[in-house]
Structure formats: structure tokens, C-alpha cells
Image 1 (cartoon, rainbow, N blue to C red):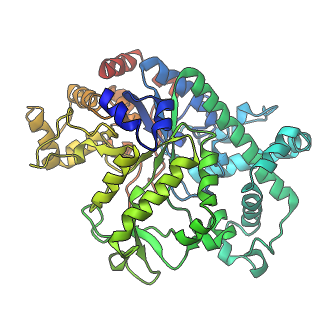
Image 2 (image 1 turned 180 degrees about the vertical axis):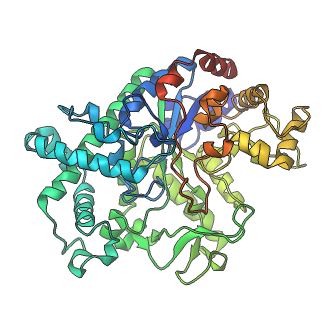
Image 3 (image 1 turned 120 degrees about the vertical axis):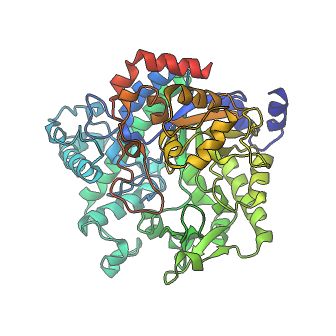
Length: 515
């Protein structure tokens, strides 16, 4: 560990590592939305982070990785953001708002459903918040703290205007609005509607900042998630069109998991324009995130080096990489990542997964001191064997699954040829059903690789107590990439947070695994 610390001390992220500590870190990953509590309004919220932080501290975790929290409108996917900075008001804790004791009975019919009814929750919360706004904004709007918040967040005015117009036109894409509304320089909207969205952001920021302060006091690091791309129907694209390349859609070429490729529908970046502005948009985005997080995941980091670009009329397989010249990939990726490191005190960590990853990506990440991601089932030796836990690259994060993959239980059952490699490494006889003691062993291995970070989906630990997870492992999956299934991003934990925190046997199992 001393040699790793000495190496990192010479990298561009040296000061970031000093804040976190060059030592093994352990934690959980989850969509905040998936939490449920006895006092829930149908979805996990900012207030639920406090008892979650307490539980993590009690069992020995020091990291909580959250999926993106940005406003995604009516889309349950947290990776289809309508704003690079605004938080989603669906996560507001209504009970924590000053004088917010209004009747919450409208959430009773939906709070205990097995899947997350995102649309219904969002609209019931907004309905409740409208009433709260009407009763309380007259006092808040004159407060120095609220006025300072509006002045210190330059992105807020265009976001609130965009949202007010989107409400006015029934949620339609901004390209379907009247001509005069499609440009932020000519657009106007009702001031009360604009104030409402500023009001929501004020309270969302205050609640999330409170969670970070609580995490600081408990010695827990919060890890955010910065999606590389934004919805074309976002406030950022609407207000800053010169920064986005709308001639192409981002995606992925055909691979083992998507044989026809993927077309995500997100615009690309006009990197020359970002350079001209000194990357001001990116710096603002990271400065906002640093108010909530100590670390952050760089989503699809290879996209900063080169990205698969598809014209509107093309199928995914007909795309091409931009820049087209591979000799430019390393230079571009290095430039952008260095900018991101300098832009905030958060320690960046990279999602560097996927087929045909250019070697320059791994080399650059290591040179900069940025952890990559090692999914155990996808990491092998050069001879095809299972990688020993003592052979992992230290500057990395080890995990056994991701929000886009099968959970361990489902992978073990549905991909027997892959699982058999692990069974052989462990000197087990492969059987389709993963046992509890096998899960314990795999989780223990995941927390004792030579990686500096070890973070797994919360449901992987809950499965140590079978009563805490669904009987069908398919129901524990969060998302299936490249599909439009109604179950995507609607996952809810089976137990309440109170039940998790009160489960002594689970806590003891986790402590045993960590030590």
C-alpha cells in the first residue's frame, strides 16, 4: 500500500486522494429511489440518506454510491437528465420541509407497491408541492438565503424558465413549442411558474447538502454519478445549443450484449466550443455536484476519448467513432479528464467497461490516478483463467455486478459457462443455485481484492438473508440496457430501511465479510 500511495502522490489527483485516504474503502451502490421507509411518500428521498448513513457506519461501510439524482422529468431512468445541475424534486422529503405537515394521504395507495410507480409519485408530489409553494413562498422569497441561492446559481434561471414552459405545453419536447419559445432569448413564461421551480431547487439543494454534512460527521463518503450525456430535450441543450452536436446521436456499436448495437438518442458535445469557453459548462456542472458528493463516477469515460456517433437516418451498426482519427483519442481524453480533475475537489472514478476499449483509456486513467472499474465476472487472466484477488490493479474499484447487469444470483443461474469458471477457481462443483455460503465467499473475495475500492449493489448483501429479497432473482434487477421494458428503473428493495437496519444477523454477516 505504501508504494501505491507513493505513486498516487505523484499524480494529478494526489490532493483528491489525500481527502479520501489511500486505503481500502468499502460500500454500497443503489438508486436512491429504490429505498422505502415506514414514512415513505412512495420513493426513497434525500431524508432517507441519514438513516442509511447510520446503518453503513454501524456495519463498517464508508462509501455510499448513488445513481444520478438530476431532474429527469417523467422518465424513471436517472440517465436521461433534463438538467446537468438541477436535482429531481421527486427526491424531496416532504416531512422535512418547514411547516410541511400537510396531509400526505395521497401517497398511501402507492407507497407499498412492489415496483416503483415513478409517474404517479412524481405527479402526486408536484401536486402536493404546489400547495406548499402557495402557502410558503411569500415568506421564503424575501429571505437573504433564498435570494443568495438564486444569485449564486447562474444555471437556475434558464432551467426554471425551461421547466415553466415545459409545464405550459404539457411536457412536449421544446422543439414542438411555439417558435418564439424555442429560443431562451425570446422566451417568456409566467413568473409564478418560474418561481415554483426555483423554489423546488432551493429545498432540494438544502436537503442534499444536509445529507452531505451528516455524512461528513459520520465519516461516510458520498459518491455521485455524472452521466456523460444529456437528454436532447433538456434545459442545457435548449439554452446552450452551440455546446451540443445535434447532427449525431450517441450510441454503441454491436457487441456481445447488444448484437445490433445501441442508439441512445443523446446529442454529442461540440468539444471545440467547450474549449473556446474554457469548459465553463463542465466546470459549473462539477462545482454543483461537489456540494453533494466527495467522489463521483465518470459515466462512459471512453466517450471522452472517442464516441460512437450515429446519424438520425442510420442504424446503430452504421455509425462511426468521433474523432475518426484514433491518434487523437488519447489527446482529447487526457485534456478533458485533466480539466475535470482541476474543476473540483471530488475524487473522480471511471466506468471503463465495454467491448473494444482502447488501451489508451486504461493508460490515461492510471497516469492520472483515476480508478477504473473491475466487475469480477468480466475480469480474467491472459490465459482465460479467473483472476486471483491478489492480482487486481490497486487503482480500481472491485464489484460483482452493476445496475445494468444481472445480480450475482441471476448471473450464476443464467450464465453457467461463465459461472463455472468461478466455481473452478474456488474448487467448487458448479450447481445452478448459488448457496448462501458461496455468496458469502464471493462477497468476501470482492472486499479483499487488491483494489482500493470495493462497492456492491445493496441487494447483493440483502440476499445474504433470503427473506430480504424477491424469490425470483429477475425481480432484483434494476435495468436491462438497450430495452424499453416497463420494469426498467422501477426496482424497489423488498424490505424497508428500518427492517434492514434492524436485521442483526445481516449486520453481523457484513461485518464478517469486511474483516
